[in-house]
Amino acid sequence: MLTSTFILLQGVGPATERRWWQEGLLDWRRFIERPRVAGLSPERKTFYDRILTLAQTDLDEGNLQSLASQIRKSEHWRFYDNDRSGVLYLDIETNGVSAHNPSGIVTLVGLHRNGRTLTLVHGETLTVDRLQTELNQCTLLVTFFGSGFDVPYLQAKFPRLRFPMPHFDLCLAARRLGLHGGLKRLERAMGIEREPALAGLDGGDAVRLWSQWRCGNRAALDTLLAYNAADTENLVPLADLVYKEMRARFGPESVQTSSITRPSS
Image (cartoon, rainbow, N blue to C red; front, side):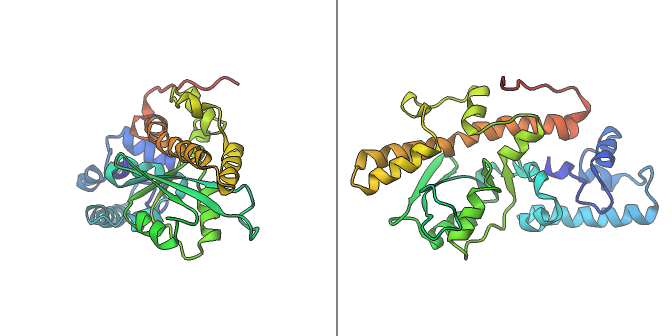
């Protein structure tokens, strides 16, 4: 999908991009190889060829930060199928206090990549350096409303933390598809299951469990760790489903009819 993206070109929007797809210009290579493109002057075509050649070089060299800076954040879902091994799924838990309140803390950070889940715990393994090391190894960050909550909260509590990679926010992408509600609601709508013991838990329970753990209840921490792991790991099948539908609606496949089952209200 990334090499089918033309909206990184100055003056090119979704309508022009879609028209080019319909005309058979399905990726950067085909665009560059075609001598003329309807509606473009030779000078503009040469200019676009140069930009796309540089974009291909960035992609080949793994310089995704440069590409991400040229594509608006709402379109970062296009990076998802580029390198699955570098995708990092992230979900945090807090003590329920605002990030702007000094007493607010990040209690857990769940990180899932390549089939492996790592949970960083406040006061034990969660440090800015450890978290930055994990972030530096990813080529794409995937969250559920992370742009509105997880990332700003982490940045407020760890000012040195950097998020230079592209970011695929599943919540915002789902809204573009007409799917509304929280993570658990969308999971149910799309047939993504949780263990029965975790199915009824929510963010309020996560706050309660952390408080119980701080009072010495080890079982509460075990449940909280399992809850956060489910939140993090379930981003994988959800991202697969959302990405597939985003391609069908807004990618080269968008010239064909697409449908999705929406959750009942």
